[in-house]
Image (cartoon, rainbow, N blue to C red):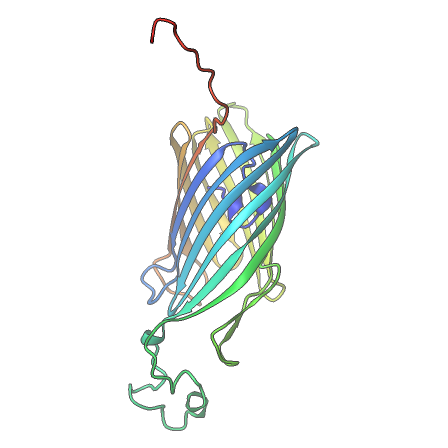
Length: 294
């Protein structure tokens, strides 16, 4: 399922609908302390005079081992007619929180004292701490994005963690750097001879200029309701995609990642997404008073 709002504020309310979105991802099933991701979003369009806008609120959470990253972002986009469609220029601002589960960490190797010859952890301020509470760090977070879409295609460019902040756990040796991440995405709809079918190839590139990830996707959609396809994540996995519209406005999607990298031995990754879209009605209905009702 396409969820451009996850990394591009310019895509907020691009369909001029109110959208409620939820996603859950279990990565590397069967792998100890595997990552678990959750994403929730609500966004809606609004107008001011003759201009169109979108606003949204996003909550995301990622658990990896002893670390938990959570963010809350307020998203805004300004909409303009362009060519055959609409371009959205977006901004998101909020906070990123990182939590370290101190109670789950073993700095000693035997539960009582550092391993013989382990000079690194002898000097680690965490290893000598008696605290058993979670350590938390908070930093400001911001991002920008541009997103164009029409009936045939979409193109998006965005930057997450624009300010490239650092979360501080209180010591120089316990700082976490949050890298700036760039996203480039695009896709095109190819009608088939049978008008009920549409082929939808797309791609997404993600990079912080030290790491690079590229997804190549092809989805076949039937009657604008049922879809299935395949993604190849360069050097990492094949992803099998299925989805359908359950009833008016409610869309369900599921994907399974089959890893091909020898670095990870697991039962694959599972992701499920649910999206509900509807037309918001803000105008007040005219009310008439009957002279027969006193």
